[in-house]
Length: 342
Ligand SMILES: Nc1ncnc2c1ncn2[C@@H]1O[C@H](COP(=O)(O)OP(=O)(O)OP(=O)(O)O)[C@@H](O)[C@H]1O
Ligand SMILES: [Mg+2]
Image (cartoon, rainbow, N blue to C red; front, top):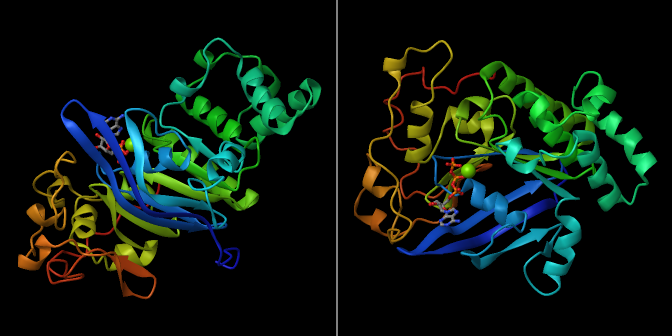
């Protein structure tokens, strides 16, 4: 924890993103609050459609028509990337100081260019290296991400590499410009379990050696434990709970987080002990006025028809719930811990 300075590197404040669709306006993000400090690893978790990727895309400036940022702010080292001359400054920051890796490397790698040339191009464009300098650095980067025989691999095309190796190439590209923040959006979902663990280990190792801040986006709580210091839980376009990882798994405050943990398999667990959260998230075309989890919540009451703010529940932990840490959780057997990282 010593390596973490107090100053947030990235702050997302009341961020709203909307998408114009035929069916109406999709309220993708409905006031997201998030911050990450230097050297910190934050997990962004939540069910499909909760807004994890849209949050990452907004930070990276990738929200495009039919989407738009409808409110709120994104600050990098205290300065807005959206207001004033922010958009101009953001161009230099994105891709260089903040890098993003996606779930599927095939969509972001050019199939017609060797991987060495693709990484080299990033170095030439962003860092002004000569071709010769870039060639040497490419080999170092491939080595750093655990790709064996770098000179041979550098001359290969993306399709000649396995999924795990391609993801390593994406990571090499992302760290090429020595970013301070790495956002990894479900970086291992497309990979098998063993390779998943290796890629996560690689990210954790790089985080340590490069003193990176990392936002790890996942819908799998099992990969979070042991890897991330802090967790932010998303539901229906908002952060509903945030806290230190160990603490949050030990005593989650929000009924949604409690349900999410209950439905996470432990490696040694039997499937029948899992309890999935009943129901489905609300439509973001017409999100409810009150707590978005209310229709699925086992402890909902009348006041939940009013939106609860994200408020401190105990030191280091906040939850958007009128009744945080209520008995619903205490009924859960001790087995409801997150799965260890394999
Ligand atoms: N281009 C788009 N047009 C319309 N709606 C969109 C668009 N992109 C995202 N959305 C909506 O925004 C919401 C948040 O989507 P997002 O992709 O961030 O979810 P997610 O948490 O990353 O889910 P997953 O775990 O499936 O990746 C969803 O309701 C989604 O349908
Ligand atoms: Mg996503």
